[in-house]
Amino acid sequence: MIDHIATCRCGQFSATCQGDPVRVSVCHCLNCQKRSGSAFAVQARWPEDKVALGGASREWSCVSDTGNLAHFRFCPDCGSTVAFASEGVPGFVTVAVGAFADPQFPRPMISIYEERKHDWVAVLGDEVEHWSDV
Image (cartoon, rainbow, N blue to C red; front, side, top):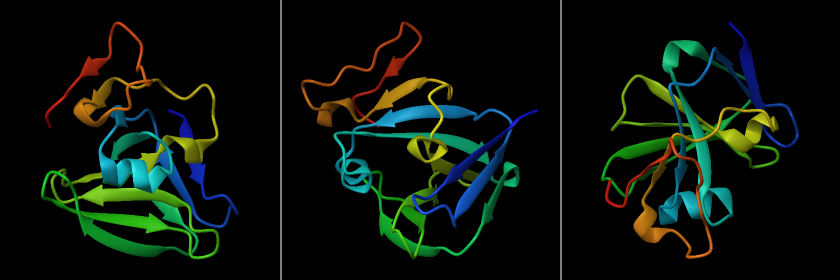
């Protein structure tokens, strides 16, 4: 079993994830667009017992588009969000795929909140599920 290691931009806050994620998704919700600073966000989910966070971090919480409270962990030095958890998906930790800096990372299996997707974005692949309403 391999470990996937995600870090913030300055490298002091990390998430070490054991094995492959149970889900890799692209999210087009407005909160993820703001979190990522892009037109969408890509994230991977693991059971919480497969994720070890290391280094200093801060937490910020907000209510997500689904109405669930989400807790975001970010580096207090560079500000990069590395991991988050949602009360709507208990027992799991989600990690920003960009924090792995790995072009060979597993591809997304699902694209959600597509009703908020920018019209120039396409998430490709025959196996990708496309959800408009979550």
